[in-house]
Length: 138
Image 1 (cartoon, rainbow, N blue to C red):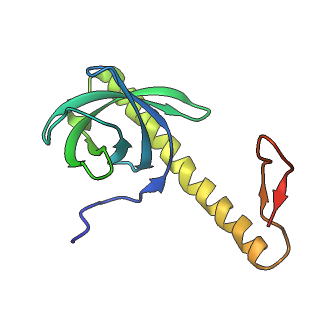
Image 2 (cartoon, rainbow, N blue to C red):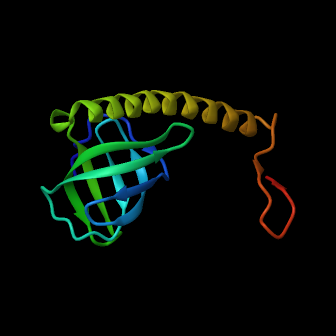
């Protein structure tokens, strides 16, 4: 299948609320152009919907998306952001969202540096403890 995405996608698990349907979901990836939301939805391809995305540290931003594709196998929808239909406040939300994505690329670079140090045996990959046990290192 030919890849149609224009921008980089980042793995991200952010809470999403679709007010028109009163349903909650989670992103599995995000980009400047859109996101994939794991959600059981009655939407169809071509539907335009409002969505609220909870960004860590930043807060909730209100965006508008076009349903680009449905994925019944994984119960989700691919949404393309439609900046041209944004009201002035939605353009400001989108601006905040795009600033957040620029920060995501920097976080990915930091993550890669961390993993490189682990591969070089200069650091151990740490994990938080399970709720019932001790902290782990690998």
